[in-house]
Length: 436
Image 1 (cartoon, rainbow, N blue to C red):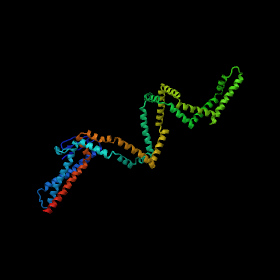
Image 2 (cartoon, helix red, strand yellow):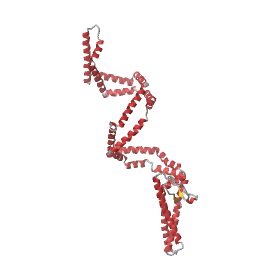
Image 3 (spheres, one colour):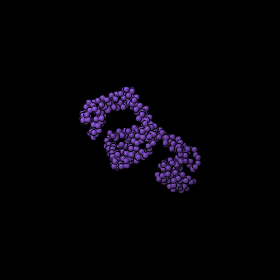
Image 4 (cartoon, rainbow, N blue to C red):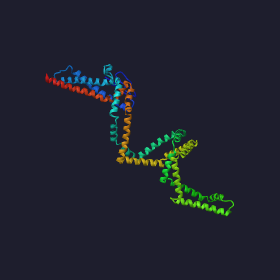
């Protein structure tokens, strides 16, 4: 009878009459201890039946000892039969190469393929995945977890750590290479004139440009008010030299005041003719960008000259450095707006997921759709993990691993066989007495 070797070593060596199990974790050690215990119990019952049988062989069989002998004999037969059946799954009983024994080592690959098919057909199906996701209520549970400020802070902390690591892996040369090798050529090939025309037309129609116009008017007005002498001098330089100086000075002052007054009128009057003229000009430019081939060609040439200038790559790198430094600074400061807004957003998301059935249903639906797509597209490939893993083991290794996990439960077959055999023997002996 096979016994288990003692000791919680990482790999227990094979010895005569002992099994070799690869123990790689505390869970495996616990399984091994429980398997050893159950093997001892089943073996103990079988030995007890044999001892009782040997003791009662020479006793008077006409009385109670006949029942005891018959029960022990049947228990011995049942226990031996079930020992043979259980042992034949994992090895040749007593090392004898009996046909159709050592089933797992010899049929390992067939078993792996069968397990793969069973796993794919019964677990990796869309209906099963959707049902499990619906039962799990992932959105609600995640929302309840995320609603806790400490958990939201943890999520932001982990996201910051990952983001910082990702940013550190992007150097200036990567940005330069992407700009000159991918972004700029793509922009050069893509016509921008019609797009710019549509954008400008939409901006004018919506009045979005009015804020920029107000800003420019105010800037010019402030410059005029801050530099009256320079403006007067510029106007005076254009005055006739033959005119009296007093006349030129008055003319320069008058011109300066007219310019200031005109800017004030433009600033204060949303319907000023100058504003209307500017709108008409912008609309005409927008139309030419969309329909005039000559304007489009000049625009594209200007775009190409600008994009192919060496300063573009330097500007992209400089912009990336500024952006990276800003993000790094915000991530380093847990009191920054980035951190506070991220935590607030996660808190709102958690509350919505925890309390809003519509949001829960929507998120669970997204998760279920994603999982179903993965199962539908890659379910068969995922199931091959089972067969490939088992097929990578040698026969003895597979047998040891499987016995380590299910061998304890199989020992109950031996125990039940011994007990049921004894009861069957008692019943047969009792029936025989009544029939004689």
